[in-house]
Length: 382
Image (cartoon, rainbow, N blue to C red; front, top):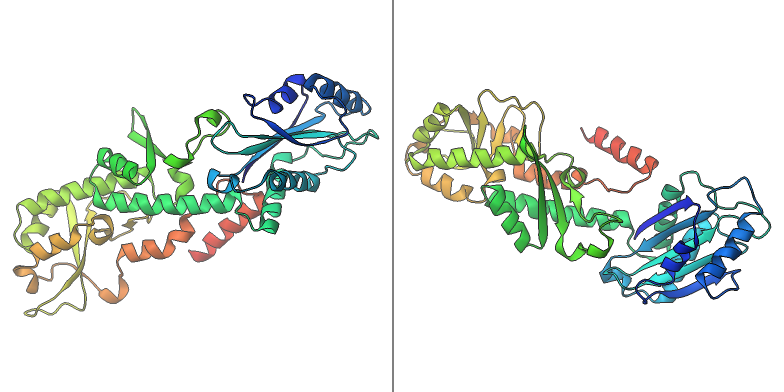
């Protein structure tokens, strides 16, 4: 569940907003409030808040929002209980004034709350320190107790789906224009950013079904590429497209592997062949993969597709790699070992990428302790 909570000094407008929502708001809970109007309830809260002059930001406001496919299945009473239990974990008591309203006018059903941090005896029961973080953790605890997906779990699932679709499209397409079109067919919008120095410099992926124009100012849907994968960079996607272009050009004028390699070397690229077994001259040697690298490459780190000192695996970056290998294997491949990779030490990068997919995912909303745990796990895997 997406959520937000902040402490602030409010006016009657906050309560008016909660009670309106284009006429669709439904109040599902209130406590120690006698008035039926927003102005009357505000005055009641302000009177109680003045019993503790040390606290200036006496109100806690925020919301809890569940994805549409889950939120619409929750009964209002269930939604109310989730909110009250989460608020109780951050200090709400039965002596605090509050009002909870469910809003239905936007795509995602959500519940808003206004809570007086000062209880009727003048005590501040809801501490302001890290309230957004603590409330998020509280919501996740309640969701876990009820068997509902948390915002982190939903985020991880969405990122995995985005990364899977994106890498599939990168393998099948040769440029950003076609990538955008194919991702659209899969239900994703690609938003590219650019600058004068680098051209295309960033990417954001949004699920079409998650678009919510009514709440765009509150939170932006989708994830940046860096949030989806800590390995796949926009620069690497550019390199993949450039590599595929170079391979296509070299293939046009080559009817065997030797000429194909020579064509690429002339363009400044090295070629290494990975066979299914050790290369044996004069015998049929089946190609498992072809690895290509820029001879004067400045790349120093492994990427999602790129392997340091080896380059790009055609099986990883090109879904049509099979046709290329088949066309190049018709003649000189049987006797031309070239610069082979030893099979026992080099598996296809597409296999490596698949195996490490889970390690590349990083949730957007995590506590500091959770973030440190993720970092520790990643360090141990290196």
